[in-house]
Length: 215
Length: 114
Image 1 (cartoon, rainbow over the protein chains, first blue to last red):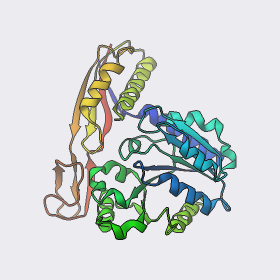
Image 2: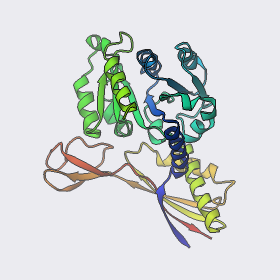
Image 3: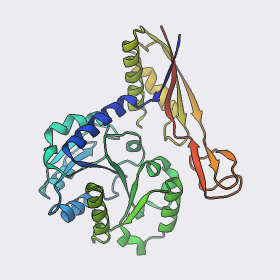
Image 4: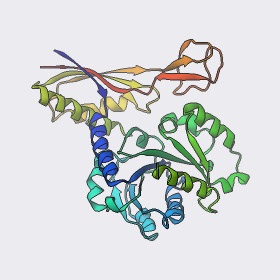
């Protein structure tokens, strides 16, 4: 007998993601899923974001890595609560991994939770974890061909942060092409240009984030 | 790279459905994958062969329909399909104004059960 099953293949993941989202809503915490390639500067951006916001908002972090606790230690040094997930080989975080560590975070005492996904420009884009917003970080050193090579990530992310703009003068990268191609994949995408190293542009991103939280 | 997780989610979803509705085994599964989804069908098939072994889908065949990226142009009003995983301009009139209608699928269509 044939049975019509009209649903997403990832329904099992999506169901847990919805349950996570419900817990986040109840706790009143705004959740960012931060994605990007290895070395794009996710943890540095996060450190700068925490510095910029921690006097006005209570922030928590989930660090996703295949192995190691280096990133969690860096975040721990900023003084905000952090939980490390080691995926043991998996190239992305999924909703169930997030659900399992939620008891380890003081959700009710947080305003913003940032989930730093495993460094990867492909796989994390497919898996919802219960976030309010997907934010992708692309460093300009990665080259201007990335939007058309990894279209799903650019389509799924509501925000793109272009990092390492302090290096632009040393590079042949065409940043206007990155923005043009990204917007053609995702016309409503919001774009910030920052330098995690010098701090340039970070305030525009943190102000935006603050605004989202209070909506 | 994440095809194994996708197959596990597929099997979870379908075996749950079978439990709820009292079906004993799955004979075949039909899914749709968009060309822009970043999924390799070969890797899906490989992961499926391994993951189905201890489930009620152990004898199931998997059929994959690949869906090209396509949309409709807001200027020339024509529908189009492309062979790439992205669209920058309408391939018919060159307009940058269009809506993508397909190519990102990761959907279950149907299964055959007993």
